[in-house]
Image 1 (cartoon, rainbow, N blue to C red):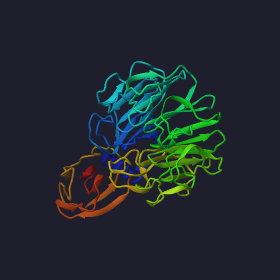
Image 2: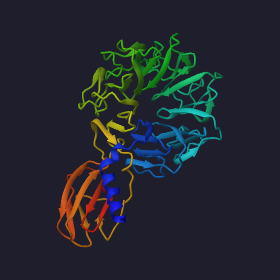
Image 3: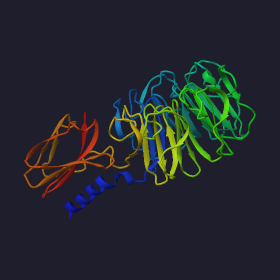
Image 4: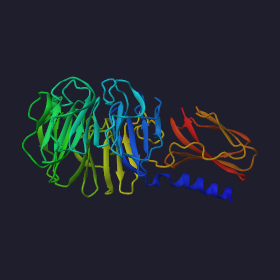
Amino acid sequence: MKKLLLLITINILATTVIYAQCWSKIASGNASHTMAIKTDGTLWAWGKNDFGQLGDGTTIYREVPTQIGVATNWNQVAAGDYHTMAIKTDGTLWGWGYNTSGQLGDGTTVTKKIPTQIGLATNWARVEVGETHTIALKTDGTLWTWGKNTYGQLGDGTTLAKNTPTQIGTANNWATLSAGLFHTMAIKTDGTLWAWGSNSSGRLGDGTTINKNIPTQIGTATNWAKVDLGDYFSLALKTNGTLWAWGANTDGELGDATNIDKHSPTQVGTATTWTQISAGASTAVALKTDGTLWTWGSNTDGGLGNGTNTNTNTPAQMGTATTWVKIWVAKHHVLALKTDATLWAWGSNTYGQLGNGTVDDKNLPIPVSCTAVGLNDVATLNGIDVYPNPIENNVTIRLQMLSNATLQVYNVVGETLFTQQLNNVVSVVNTELLSKGTYLFKITSNENSVTKKVIKN
C-alpha cells in the first residue's frame, strides 16, 4: 500500500505541478531577481543573488523558486536592483541585500543576506524600491524615504543619503507611490500627482528637465489613480481609465506611436478601459478591464512576450487570453498572474529570474511552477542512485537489480523532455542536449520508483 501511494504521489507531481493555485503577490527586481508571496503567506525568491538580495543567507543564484525562511505572514514585497524590502501582516518592515547607500534603512551601510527588521514600527502599509533608494507609506498616510539621494529622489530637500526612514514633509494624505531608477512619484488621496528626483528626458512630467528634491505637483488634475515608473519614463492611469505616459521614448516605451521624448503627461490612445500598468527599464505592460494584456516598448530580451524580439511603439495585445489579473515588470523580464492563480514569466532569463530552471530567455509566456520547484529528493528506495549531481554531459544511474527500468526526465513545470529504457544495472545517460537548469529524473522499475532533483551545470 505504501508503494502504491508513493507511485500516485510521484505521478501527480510529474503531471500537475503547473496547475497549483498558490501565487499571490510578486515583485520583480531591476537587476534580475524575483520575489513572490504565496497564498499561504510564505516568501519565495529566485534569480540573481550577488548581494544576498534573495534573502536565503547565500549569494548563490537560484533558477527555481526557493523558500525564504519559514514565516507565513508576509504581506507585501518590493525588489530593487540589489536590495529587497517587505512588510509582514503585523505591519513590521524588513529589508535585505545591498546596503551601501543605506537603502535598507537599518541605520547602517552593511549588506544583509537574510530578512532584517527595520526599526520597531508596526504601522507600515506599503513599500517600493528604486535602484538604490526606498520609499514607504505608513497607515497614517505619512510618506517616508531613505537610501541614495544624488538626484533628490528622497524628496527631503537635500541630496544627502539617509540610512534610516525619514519622513517627507508633514502631509498625511499620501495614497500610492512608485520608485523609478532615480526618480519618485506619488499620488495623494485628493487625486493629485507629485514627483521628485532626476528629471532627465522629462520623466517627472512637469514640462522641464530640471531635477527636483522636494515633491512637486504635476499639473492640476485631481483624478490620478495609479503611477508606475520605469528607468527613464513614467506611466500613470486616471480614474476614468485613460492611460498616460511621459519621459524617455527611445524604444517606444511611451506607446504614443513615436520615439520622441515627452516632458509632460501624454495620453496613450483613446481607450478608457485600462486598469493596471507596470514599467520596466524601457518596456511597458498594461491590463484592460476585459482581462487582456498589452505590451509595448523595448523587446530586446523578449519582454513584450509576443514571440519576437522587435520593439513596438504602440500597445499591442499579447496573445488572446482574457484571464490576466496582475502584472509586474522588471528591467528586462515580466511576470503576470492569471485568474486561476497560475504565474507566467517571459523576457530575460540570464540569471534564472524567470524561475523555470533554465537561464534561457523566453519571448513567450512560460509557467512558473508552484510545487515542483525547490524540491529535495522526493524518495530514495532500494538503492537507486543518480550521480554525479550536479551533472555535466552525462549522468550515471545505478539500480539495485535489472528489471525493466525506465527513466523519464521532466523540467520543473512538469513537461516530459525524454524517456529512456535502462538496460543495465549501471547505465550512463547522455544529457548534452539539456540546457543548464533544474530537472526531475523519475526512474521506475518493477520493484520501485523514485524521483530525484538533478542540476545541470
